[in-house]
Length: 320
Image (cartoon, rainbow, N blue to C red):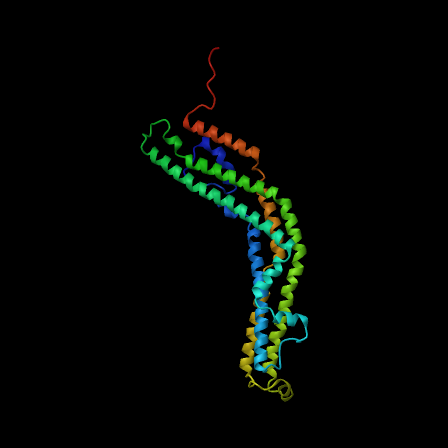
């Protein structure tokens, strides 16, 4: 339950409110770096694109061989890349294993994934605690309703949920910031290694795209040339000439698929975002230090004592 705290309790909530972290309405997801988690998704999509390109190449090659009764195929049969790609039995597994074989890449990705998972665990812990704090606040409110309004402690305990919730959120924000600070250098090392390995892995996808693109064009040209006597004499008139409308549709479908294959995640940008967002988290939480958290804890005690009408120190004796 979130209620307005009396003036004596405002000190602890000022910072939380200023950064939008109040337990009553704060959303930690808004400050949580997204790029570390997005990298895994981006790499997976990147791998999927390469494996799909290989599968599409194999499909178009088989189609051409079928239409020409084995006398026409994609690319040059003696091309090592064509021969290797044609023989891949499981494109998805082939691509994933190629990435996994790069120990520098896998080790660096593991660092970023573990960091992302830990940040999420911090947020999940806060979320669970806030739910428990809400139950506590509800129990306190229920007690307050049984106490006469004139009772000395009744009105004072009403904001207990807000007080504890904001302090918990304050501590969480500090933990996120300190973690970001500690992980700054390891992240920079991991990102630098990934950037150095990325061109090599990207080359595999570019090669797969080139093979598929040339094969798709070969298939279109075959359908276009089947009525040419000299072409048919060599590769066989095994299909009738396609109409202009059919060829136009086939070409449009090729253009759509070509555009889709070009829409791959920008891994380089994701790597840059990891460092940028981690720097931002450090900057946003720069006011939350171990000392400021300790001071905030003292403020909580003082505010609570003031609200409950309890002196923080024993009253000085009038005489000794």
